[in-house]
Image (cartoon, rainbow, N blue to C red; front, side, top):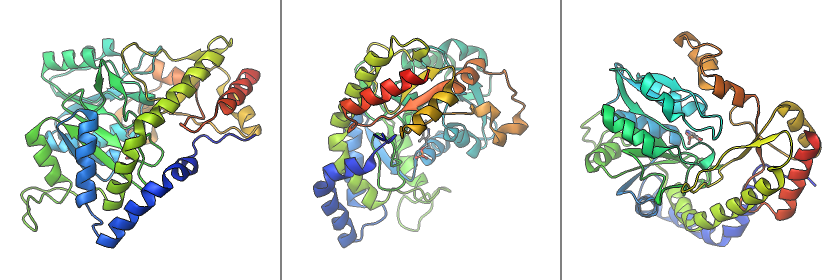
Length: 366
Ligand SMILES: *Cc1c(COP(=O)(O)O)cnc(C)c1O
């Protein structure tokens, strides 16, 4: 039986009676850009994350970019992030005119290697953006300690980490600010594009509310040059409904991940990433490592099982950054993982039978 990588239709069916009326209500009140539904969601998402403020914006990429602008990171600055991330993390740094500085990841968990951060700090370094890749938080204790020592900002790329935890706190409340994506395929996904920023900093929050809306503290008074990165009313309404289900959906993902781990951990040729005590994983993605990755992916495809690769090319080898001077071999762990990683179907509605079917198919393809 075919197994999809993600099934957004199944999720929609399960909340149709809740979500259809709130969309209708936004349409009827015509509060399409920001508005009461967005404000309600911002309040609820801030409370959920344990942060003082949430600012709804147009996308996860916009969230990262606006945080950097809000912290006045710009052309003379360097911002550190990890070599194995979605392109947008580095892109946001480039968009504000700063220079992305990359650090390799750890082979054991694919997260930023905190032992390599200090050696990459220069007197131009302004901020670090750790990425909670696949839904497991980076080692925020070590990162925050280093940042404190060198007076750097820390910005969580929490675009894959809705509801993830670190030592009893949630992603979004672990640093100076955090960027979330509400792209439809994320654990908390809108019905279109969307993003959010969480922070405890009142001044930064105020600045971000202006930055997302043409620098306006009030209508047609522009105090600063901002952007149009408002969150849609419809998205706010949808996200607020979905937020109530997030813990249950993440729980479903964890159950499925636990079964995958049980079925795959002893299969020769498969390596699983380490998960840390006291870091609640939301399993945005369930990623395995196999040496013959392309072959395994093709064999699964022949059986109708959809998989993904997150991500096939590390940041430093992307064409867009050809001019920077990075070369193959600069971040060997990220490069090695890029050739071996395979993301298996993962979503809350995935059945036990499907997890077993995928696991058997993987084991038979090694
Ligand atoms: C999805 C994602 C982003 C970007 O979010 P968009 O909403 O697509 O702009 C940034 N970083 C990571 C790690 C992501 O997974």
